[in-house]
Length: 195
Image (cartoon, rainbow, N blue to C red; front, side):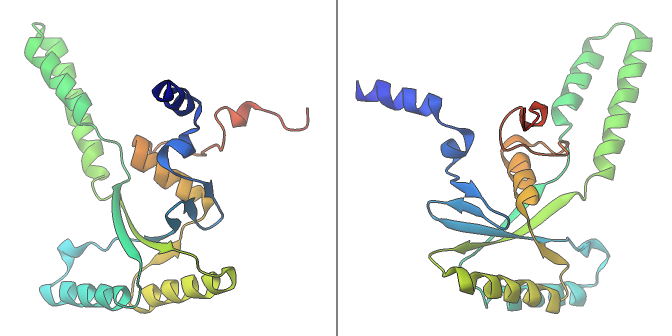
């Protein structure tokens, strides 16, 4: 009986409850294990830097990290993944008898390769600060110090807002990088408020 009740409760739970999110505020993701604040760091193309420049970037990041106690880092792909599509096209080319169709499938494969190359550097790098029981009046200055530290060390960074956090969750859990606006409730965009 207990197992059945748990299953029913799980089926009725919202997506936020299932993944352990209590709320999304203007600057954080509220979880039972602390509030997560995200700093979005613009990546540096290290393939064009000298070894000494790369070393300087690593040292700068180390200077930022050593001043923060509860820190996590995350790297997300911010692009579509075409591997399944490419595998399907390859299987179709291998099975196709008609040379004209095979040529069209090869052109589709080439187009997907081009798109993937163009988006290869589309990554999101995040520094995540976990706030645990900090007083509300201390949070703002603490987060501002971290953002200033990142900028002082030469990183282009900004604190993620509510929309950014929703987009990050969409990319992390669903690999959805094409949605323009994330809704709080499914179908929210179709409801006209006030009627």
